[in-house]
Figure 1 (tube, rainbow, N blue to C red):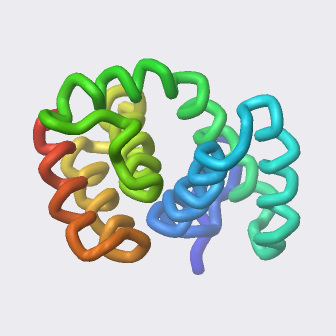
Figure 2: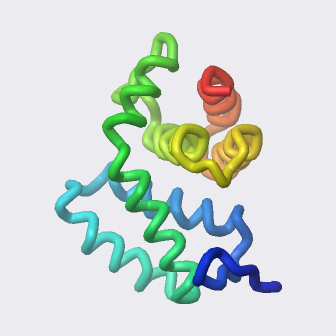
Length: 143
């Protein structure tokens, strides 16, 4: 795989691969207290093992930016997801939505259409049969 420069960091994974790593790390938030997440983050990178240092730094940076805004992201989801709230959503769908809403609302480097498309792809890979439609429907309200 060719490398590309992202600021002073050389990224070797594709954006899709990086997004999947962020999703997997962010998913741990559902099962651990926030004060335990630094240790969980360390465990995550030990388990993944294959991540290059630059890729790991990118994943960690974006994960931390998302967790800093979790309360705002969840409030936006509760507002936009008619008939649903974050407490009722599956943990996989919620994690995918959190990542996508962060990209739509706070990450100017990711076009909205790309964020939605990538979220739907994550839902197809990790979610239940109806997850991709649910994720697409919720995120369409952010477009």
